[in-house]
Length: 565
Picture 1 (cartoon, helix red, strand yellow):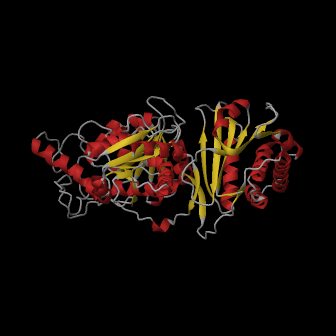
Picture 2 (cartoon, rainbow, N blue to C red):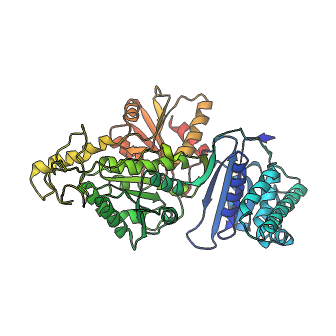
Picture 3 (cartoon, one colour):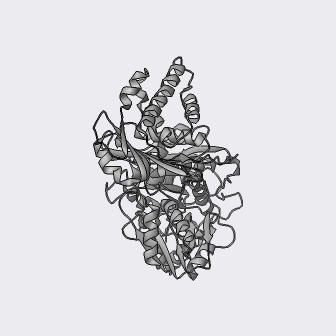
């Protein structure tokens, strides 16, 4: 039976090549013209511990990790017992017969991938054996896998051809095992032709690329899961004239270093996770008060404290929107797909420059290392904005009152025209400390009025005459979208609202929110943080929450939304 999509999961222990296997199949499928999305979950240790990595391949864009699994490759018995219940009806398990045996009669078969790999002359080709078996189970084109292998291992080395031939042989050995088992889970339909050039990229890499395309020239960061890959990307790619990357000794150093860089006129960014972001509150308050541009990426993980370092969550929203004491509400951008990550990275830099202040970009573990094929962005389409800078004839009153209309006062940069004190105390028009109430009133209003400059973020509104809307944020967008489309197919009247910008919300979004009788917010936290902020702003909202460290399943959201409506 032809099917539009399949989910293949490789499960076992960390260090067994699970991510490599899923990534390899994803790239082969993307090369064949399919849409792909990977998802991995693993413990916070270097080697060992229960882990899995999967790929969903489809003839249409992949919105989520899916509800279940069609093919499970279980490399140890614990993995089989832990994942077998996720198998879809008709799903098949391929188990590691060198590690354990299962009784006859089940929907599974054994494979000795390591032994078969050794017979090819390349003992490291075991993952290719399993990929070959998977390909047979879904009737995936072997020629596309061969093409992927040739491209992957043609590296200009003397033994390239030997490696290619061994891997292709390993693929065929896996096919033979699956063929002799007699199992099949269906046939993947042929992909739709699409002339747009595709790239496979992770969410963190997409953010980094977007930020650089908008002119980022200064990055400082401290390694912390799951944000470290942004630091590594910058170290490998942000170089050339007047560009600087540095690994600092702490998150406190990171926020203060980019604060200094922003003061000096640079487009500055750092990335961290919840524990590191908690240390940046004072620096972010100083940036807000002194009106210095910078961007902080918070790649969310399970918390509090060390929490779940390698699992996903959406529980940092309160912290990100209100990170410092006093009256403060940060601009917050939260992309929901890998493609949106690219544009969010660029927008965050431009927002910081436009309104001269700090911007928070909320990422999360489920998107950070997830690989997807997206339409290759045209970097020439990215608008690069820069702050207004003092000229020879400016007044020097940078901190003058501003009512949200007209151009924002220019910012002096050391070495250029003008001079001012970037003062963390309340200050007068030129930055000198003052405790007079009139200055605190007018500058508090100025700092909040500046948020009116921030627009241009992607948003979506559908069926706006509905009374009930689904409004996901961040990485819950994909599962919520699948649930929404399923509910519409059942003739349930429902609206859809989504915004990459959480603060400030687009005016069009606020208009629809004001008319809604109920806004249902799927979010991965216990407190229902986004719905509570919406209620604080006067909208009627309630959350569907989950705090397992894993993303929503679309079928779960369908059931929960039906209960509400």
